[in-house]
Length: 399
Image (cartoon, rainbow, N blue to C red; front, side, top):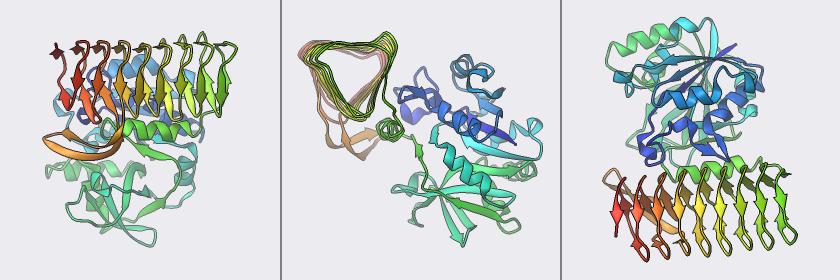
């Protein structure tokens, strides 16, 4: 069986982390999100994969190339830029000439476990959809069932319909392309509309799952998804660990990384290659640290994601935060977490515990304090002794 992965989205709601990186390449537990989908397919014997790409497609294609390193065969289809926002049905329609017979459809921006794909393959039915319970169903397509048959599906309903949602993972037959063409003629370009249109005449079987599935919609979702992925973290040490270092729980340390004495790490934690950490640093669970990261002495880090090439200087405290690639934080940087609201799209959204979100290549001076829920854009420069609150746009100078 063949698979199609949709990986063309721009991920505008994930800014500033998608300014130069496509959403499927956001690192989760030090792996691009897209790797989880490819791995889930490969472990179920599905190795022939067509990938629909678009925004920053070169980043995806240069990373995965022909797929040989993942033991799959990848074929890329470039979604036209002028219709990049047309919707998932349009994106899938690009693969019509590349797909024959039955196939799977996966989103490229979800954490998907191999066992979830296994459940989908075992279920009967020409058309199948994976559904799961969600605490925030209004962000997704909400599904109503009769037994295991889909009776109704509504994209982002304004009124509460239940907590059962579509994960965007399907088993289709190539006959679906006729339905897609018919629905697109009406001006609808989402797969939810296509599924709704075929329900009167076609049985769509729901595959309920409680297996690992996680979606990232907003920047703070990176932390939730990272914590989910780290549950599978296995202890592995390839770097140099000085005497006096304490490791508890599953901690993975990459090649060439040095952990200095007095450092305490409590897993699950993943640390990339070529890092230098310590001395006397504390790293607490659900933390991912990318490659070539420097963390200075007497720094505390918990439940956070540090992407590649970050410099976090001495005496700093970072909690429930996402730090973009190439960010430089001078000594005594402080980002504490709290239950908070974040301003996004002219709305204030309740997000729970959150510290700070910092875009790539931003440079922040010493003794800077950031209030919970702040978002600092890419390529910003913030002077020493500043206190930051709210949203700071890309390329801003704070003096």
